[in-house]
Every structure is written in C-alpha cells, then in structure tokens.
Image 1 (spheres, rainbow, N blue to C red):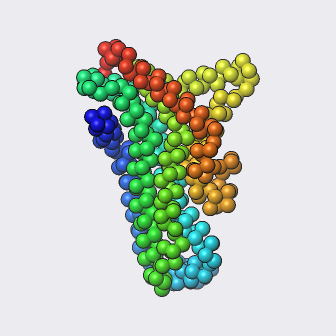
Image 2 (cartoon, rainbow, N blue to C red):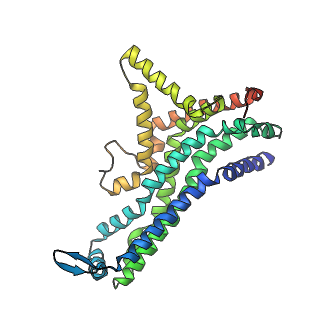
Image 3 (tube, rainbow, N blue to C red):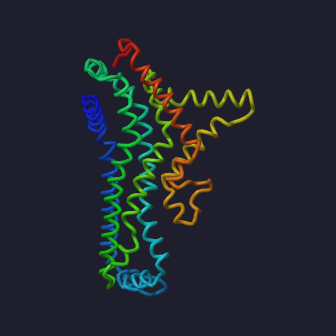
Length: 312
C-alpha cells in the first residue's frame, strides 16, 4: 500500500511540476479558439457585398440549417463527427511535441537543478521514479489533453446548437448525429494508444535524459543521426531512419485514425490502423519490449550515476 501511495505521490509531483505544459497549454489553446469562434460570429453582423448584392450572413443561416437537416443520416453524422474529431489534429500535435520535450527533460532537469539529491534522500526507489515519469508521458499527458479536447468538443456542440436556434431549428439533429459518447471514447483511446505506440521514442529520450550532462536534446538525437549516417556509409541504405520516421508517422496517424476513416481513408498516404487494431500488431509489442530495455537503462543510469559531477 505504501508503494502505491508513493507512486501516486510521484505522479502528482510530475503534474504539479509540469502543470503548464500538461494542462495549461491545451486549456489556453481551447480558450483561444473558443474565443476566436465567438468573436468571429459576433463580427458577422456586418453586411457583405458580392456581385453587386449586399447581404448579411445571418440571412443565409436558416438555409444552411435546412440544408444540414435535409442531409441523409450518414452524411449528417459524418459531418458532425468529423467536426468533433478535427481539434485532435492540432491539439494532438502539440501533445506529441510536449511529450517529446517532457521525456527529454524528465531525468536531466532534476540533476540540473540538483533536486535529485532531495528525492534520493527519500525512501523512493529509482524504479518508481522513472516509471512515474514514463506513466506520465504515456497516460497522464494524453488524459489531460483529452479532458481539454472533450470540453472543447462539447463547446463546439453547444456553439453549433445556438447557431441552429438562430437558424430556426431546435439543434436536436446536431446532438443526435454527434454520437457523442462514442466520439469521446474513441478520442481518449486513440490518444493513449498513439502514445503507447511511441513508447520506444519516449523511453529512448528518457534514457538519453538520464545520461546527458548538457543539452539533452543533442544526446537524444545525435546517436540516431550517427547510426543513420553510418548505415548509409557502410550499407548504402537508410532503413534505420526510415523505421523511426515510420514509427512517428504511424503514431500521428493512429492519433487521428478516427477522422481518417470518417474522411474515407484519404487523410494519410500510409496504412492506418484503428486504435483497437494496434493491439494485434506485432510492431506494437516489439516496441514495448524495446521500450522496457531503454527504461531499464534509464533506471540503472539514475541509480548509479555520480551526481556530484554536475553543476548548475
């Protein structure tokens, strides 16, 4: 029980130390885009002149609402759900960038600011500490970003419902077409599974973070480029860098797989898996095995490195 409590405390520590990147960044993004939508709508009270005609966009709203409600059920559902999944493209991209820099700094920053000396004085194992950071990047960050995205998706539904009211409709068709709970469920798990798919990337960056003396970014990226250059020089091939590029591209594709399939499979030029199909993919499990090796290396390094050689 003490171990469980300690692990929960470590997770909370990660959140409070990185609350800006984990929560405030997507929250500010959501508030900005929500405000932009509202302001752009309020600004549409001006008349527009086109082809010698002057009209107000509000005059066309009833026609747009009627056109939407006269669509077939499948087309209506497809349109609404694509609109709900659309924010994941941008928010998910930011989430992956945040995850990258979080993993790079996860074990380096605590040595840089010497806080590792305090944490090592507590009865908390290196294994628990490293795993808490790994869980934060593959679970906590996606869940927090999902919470903000879910709130923004609800805002979009309310926003369009109010628009439908001004267009002379009840807005019921919007909610009926949204399949909201399925959208929320798929949004959450596509984000978590995409992060799990990228686990070898995160754990490698954590290993580099545990070893780096300065500029953790270089320690995380230079070995990859050096191996790629060596492969090209010796074997005249680029399989290694292509493998990493494919891994990252597939991770982003899994993240947006829901929208990809709603769009008819035209969003990406690569083979895309539904998030639940990932668990039947051999590469996924191989990636988790590789990730566990990197994590073991990070744990070993954190346990045995002499922190006295570092200075602020």
